[in-house]
Amino acid sequence: MAPRGVTRQRILEAARTLFRRQGYHATGLNQVLDEGAAPKGSLYFHFPGGKEQLAVEAVRLSATELRGAVDLLIQTTPDTAAALRASADLLGGLLEHSGFRDGCPISTVALEAAAGSDAIREACAEGYQSWIDLIAERLRADGADEAAAAELATFAVSAIEGALLLARVQRDTTPLRCVAARIATMIEETTA
Image 1 (cartoon, rainbow, N blue to C red):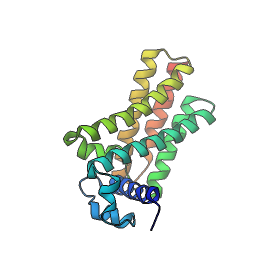
Image 2: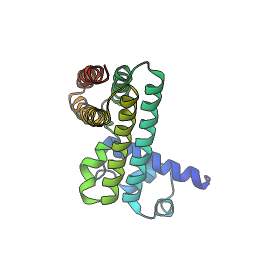
Image 3: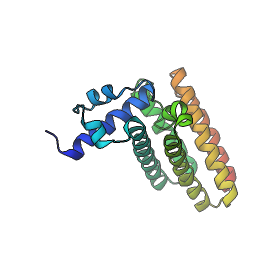
Image 4: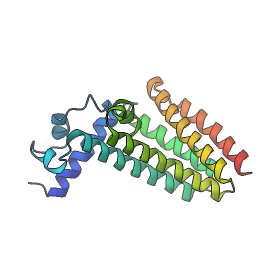
């Protein structure tokens, strides 16, 4: 028998992988349990709110992990434009590695479930906002004023999300590279 935290983590990891790959509605709880190698009763023990709670926690975990990866790129890359290009490369690499099966960990759930669940919508909004805030903070540090930083960060996240969707359906990361190049130019113009 696996320790309690391990079973919970396996369920959460299985759910977020399945949500990212096939969406919220196509992911069944029995499939999550099978993929997570967890006993049937464990899902409601660890996630008494059921599938909705599982989706909220999966979105939050994925958003936090991706924010951490982008933050690391921002901290270790000499300028924000290069960091955003590196972030787009990272996302493109993840997409290619999955055979273009795995979408954005937030948008795949948001597109299907956010309209029907305030909890899921709020988790998705918080995740996106955390990414926007991270980029805006760096833009301000580079000399952009408050309004320009917020606007450009919002544009960057929105454009990258759209590029991810287009790259996924076209099975080609060119849209990500195009968007990253345009955002980099905008960053250079804003922080010059």
